[in-house]
Length: 234
Image (cartoon, rainbow, N blue to C red):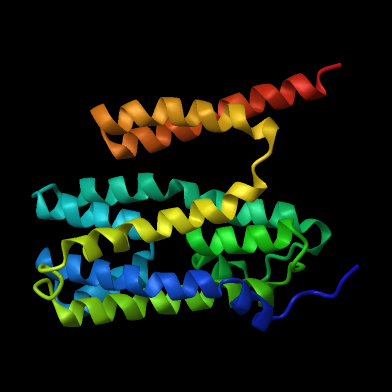
C-alpha cells in the first residue's frame, strides 16, 4: 500500500482549480458590488458560503426583493449536493478514510476541489490522507475569496465594457469540472446521468433551477438504486 499523500500533493492536484477560481471570484466580486454589496460584505459572502452558483443565486434573489429567509432556504437547497462530497471521498478512500479533521477539509469541498480529489484518488495518482485533503481544499478556497476581494475592489463598472469576458468567466468553472469528471464516467452510469438530465432540464427551464436540480438529483439516485437492486438480486 502506497504511503498517504502529503499536503503538497493535494495542493498540486488542485492547482488548475486554484488558478481558475481566481478569475471566477473576480466575476462574483464585480456582480456583488453591482448588487449593492460593499467590499467587506462581498468578501464575507464568499468566505462564509463558498459556493459560486449559490452565491449568484442569492444575489439574484436578494436583488429581486425576495425575503431573506426564502433566499437562505433556496441557497441551502441548491447546496444540498455538497453533503454528498465528503462521504463519496471517504468511500473512495476505503480503509484509509479518516474523519478526525473532517470539519476543516470538508468545508472546502466545492465542485472543483471535490472533482480534483476524486479524480486523483480514483486514478491512483494519490492516496487519501487528511493532509492531502487539506491541500486540495485550501488553495481553491483562498483563491476564490481573494478573487472576490479583487472583483469587489474593481467594482461593477470595470468589466461593463467587456461583456464577452464577463460571460466567459462564468462559463469556465462548469466546463473545467465536467472535463475533469468525464474520464470517470462508465457505461453503467449513463442511464443515471441521462435520467437526471431529462428530469432536471425542463424543470430548470420552466419552473426554477432549484427545483430542477433537486428533483433531477432525486431521480438519478432512484435510478441508481434500482440498478443496484437489480445487480444484487438473486
